[in-house]
Image (cartoon, rainbow, N blue to C red; front, side, top):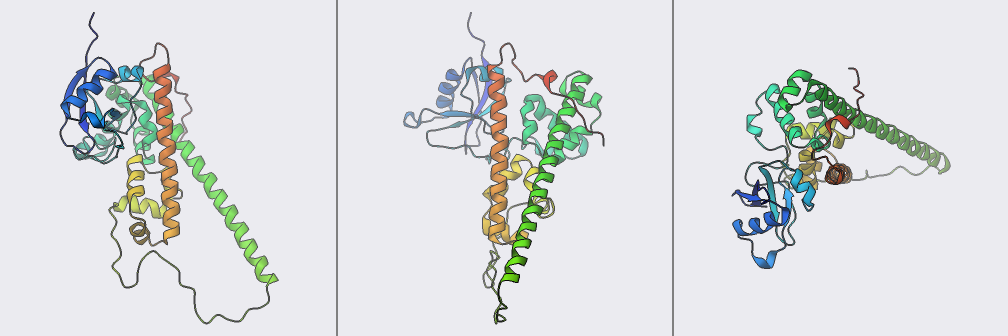
Amino acid sequence: MAARLKRCVVRRRDGPEQHGVGASCLRELRDKACGVLAIDKAREPITLVLAEDGTIVDDEDYFLCLPANTKFVALAKDEKWSGKSSDSGTSWLSEAVDEVDSAAEKWKQLARQLKGDLSNIILMSEEDLQVLIDVPPSDLAAELAQSESKARVLQDTLQQVLDRREEERQSRQLLELYLEALKTEDSVLSKVAEPQAAPRKEMDVVDTGTSSTGTPAKTALSEQILAALREKPAPELCLDSQDLELVLKEDRAALASALGWDKQKAAALQAACDQELSKRLQQVQALHSLRSTSKGKKTLPWGDWPSSKRKK
């Protein structure tokens, strides 16, 4: 019996054109993608990644688990996946953003992302997690085509992710306070030990990352992202993966100028965002690997998520 063809959608990294192809296996999809996308033989072998988050698809079992009409990006040799695309948006959450005109539409959009792949929980912002937690379980169950009990289990999992981020934020704040206290203590002790120095005639000049004569560089970040970066402790924990990518791609001088920080502080922020984004993508990849090797399970097991919803 001939293998059943699965319909897929493929495009190049920077190309606006999408092509629908049918493939029964990963190798067949690669071959057909090279043909319809006119990829030169010299630039093969290609790498297929998910258009929504850049996850590399190189496992046959994982490919078979993916739903029909999954969107792929074909990367030629030496090409790397970029969150920005020329067709519809910048990352996994960009699909149908123009439809999100209200809170009701937003939670449905987020629910559709989870219906496709539950590991997208890891990539969501704290605000998005809270939106789904606040949805009535019956409504969420209807949108996901699942039972109400499974919808409650999912909301428990969302709450756990939110709780873990809050715990991590509090731990970082305590560590920062401790290090600041040590720094203050060392400063006091050094002042007591040093002989009284002559008053300084000139004040030290602090590099703020901007020039007094030049025009400050402009940032492409939205006011919402900038507000989170300024006001939130450990802001990398509250942003979604799309926003983390935007912060990483931002020019450091422009970022420092927009936030009113020096370049060193802006660099530390970008490093924290890079670390958080890498951690989330590794977690997603680990879940995908577990799912592909799990015997007899073609989708992420809803019923296996532990339940411990925090009371608000």
